[in-house]
Image (cartoon, rainbow, N blue to C red; front, side):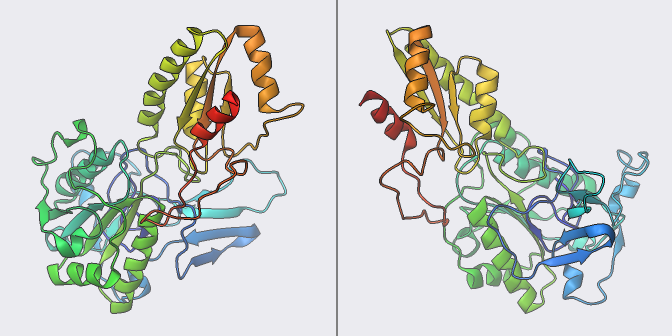
Length: 384
């Protein structure tokens, strides 16, 4: 999961203890559409650009540092070069030409040799916001166990019910015993909600309770909220680390290999595709349409299609398509039905939105645009 010292994973603002890798999140990356109010840009030689993240030391001078407790942990101290160098960065583009500038880089996450909190002084909280995603409980469990077993932190609580839980509900004590089996359950034991972001009330609660590490698990809207919370914390000059952990089942975060929940989504999609294939083959000229998640990227649809081998057509947001005329979807459907007598179409929820006549203007409480049901739309167009 990276480190809170220079970012836990994904959008991370603030600083604090290091938490080691978990849930496949080991590279810093900005969530789509999230903009910090003050970006930290470092320019180097040969076109090197580092998009850095905010840090406690940016606004609190002369912060003391402490040796990382991992150096005395028998499970880690024997490993050479376990700590991440402070100058380590990850390039945005992997494929380059010999004369290309070095380009944009991101700060690499991972444990540093120095941390900014003593274990006994840490009071950490964890909150989950927005929609559900496979792995939420696993991430919560790993944060708690990592803080306890790797860093000696004993005060960790959960915020009940999303952002509004900061100011409307009691906290939930979290220990390794409490979270021991939660990774086997669905949903989130902390509860979640959309909206409810009242910055002043949230930061007042953090300040009044004496919390100094805040772990925020959520998607675009949640991370926008995390950035606003950090800005208020910085304005007040509080010694509080805010770490944003990106939650997206769509795997649509640049630079990182995979977001948590993605593998489970692809696996579950196989069941739907298999059922659609069985029904399609049972009828003359049967067509099975499976709509999968993927607002702006089609990773779930694409990976599920590649794994299934029963899919005849995969439609994703990244590849525009048209319905009628030469090379259109209808022509392809007609050809496949003549060849096989049936077909299966997989479509990501964000595909073909430009073709849907009635586009919705409204948004959900998290600020995400509500999309028309493209699965229902394309089914009606095929039948018509």
